[in-house]
Amino acid sequence: MPRAMLSLLLLFLCFVFLSCTGKQAGRAEELYTKKCLNCHSSSIICLHLGKDKEYWDETVSRMLHKNNQQVSSEVVAMIVDFLSQSQPGAEQVCQRTGSQS
Image (cartoon, rainbow, N blue to C red; front, top):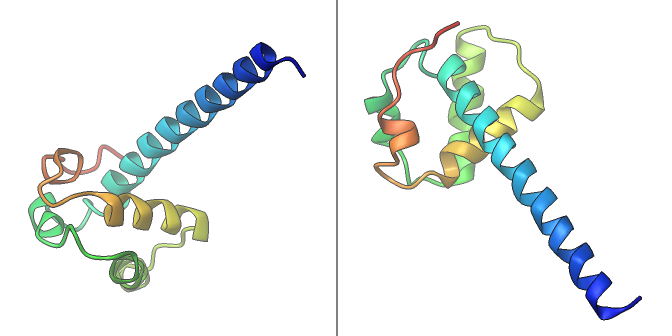
């Protein structure tokens, strides 16, 4: 395969990956708003940002069970990834308000 064509293919794949990643991040933020902010203020969640994935997995799973919410493991994973990857003080977590169900 010619080098120019290979470069174009690589560029295209990067574009596809980045656009999918952006959509997934937006979906995770939406799920966080709908599932977490129904019961909690963003300020209490914000206090725990910076904790690892294991912490968030245990916490999200416990809260969903406590509130009898049935969600797929994919949804749990998206919320856990979103929270564990958010830095302390992250605006997308700390400045959000309750759900618009």
